[in-house]
Image 1: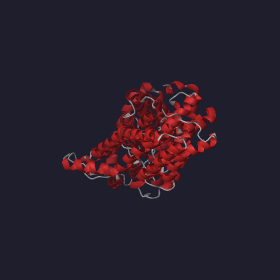
Image 2: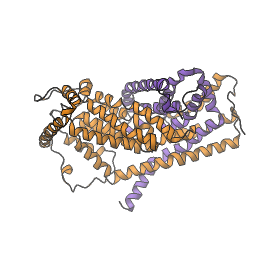
Image 3: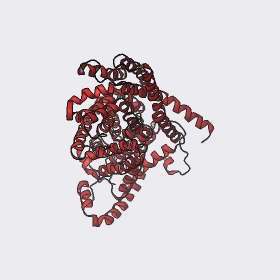
Image 4: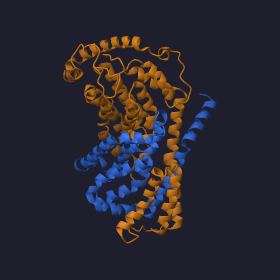
Length: 164
Length: 370
């Protein structure tokens, strides 16, 4: 390692990361305003009318969030507070719904176009993410179902893992 | 003090629709209009702010402070750590350390496509996700799998499905840090609760991966790989996630998984080597000396008292066939020469796939007993 290599790494990292760093700034501002203004609370109030069935919906929301935005971090920032509030209204173990949101978001990753476009950049499927996403979709849904079962089982049988 | 209004429109359904507008607008801009993420989040911020001001009657000055506070949280909690994670990763790539690790791992595994799948898609993918995320695990892992002989689209799918469970700890735990920041719950408690759910979730993907590369029979024939692969990752991920926090579970999980699989490979190898994937379980070209792989693995599982004897036999057996493999497959000289200089070129694993391919040349038509 020498100075010029370090400079090159620095430059390369900046050119890779500046977009993601800006997203970090804006999405958190957006999320804090969303939570502070009361929109998250309104959304939580409306969703809480689903009752206990919301436990199945929580991972789906995370899944949709990441499938469309491509970022688990952004999805957690947007939905985290709202999921936590629904949990408080309905009396779920406090950490359960945010946890399911985050893990549901993991599962949506294989069908997120933003992730796929980076992912296929080294193969011959460049700019053909659609085919890749369609190919991934079935197994991703299978994993989502598995997560719903885990979520329900966790709520019914071992809620203490999501206790405060 | 500003009091939040729960139902500003007077009708809960309409409030619900309006509250969803920022979310839907953001997702619409990203998924349909395909705007750059930073532009979409900037426009989304403006929409959110306007709705908060006009509909939810948020005071302007406090709203601005909330936005600034959020942005500062984003910079300090997430940007700072992900930036240095990528710096670390780029340094590893630049100095050739990463490539060395990759080569060493390929040489440790057998030619069996299932072993390479678990080693690379599962464990190596988790390591990459833990350091960088952003789809880089696919970009790195897919070319390696393609070089082994898995059809392109399936290789990408394997890399993508393997990159499921580790995502929450992606980029040094950024998603969990974000979750803790917005919910106000303690970071360690959230990390612990997620690591437990992920531990249950992680039991499944290695089986899916084996099924995807080698079909049902191939999957059952290599069941120890799936068991050790998932339990190895969990053994690293769960304690770190529960007791240390969200920063390193993926990295530690991947390293423990590597160690467990390499130990497993000293004791056991898949009965028949699946050199080519695509759900074709090619019959071995010469008759097997012992029973079918499944029967042999079961026997080993149950007869723990004979474990050492069996493993010793397996080792001798494995070594002999590895020697013959070396003759057949012409290992690249770089792997053998000790003075080999690591590649200083930047890449995402692309340049090396040709080398790997040449190394595995002929393996698609041959099957070996290892």
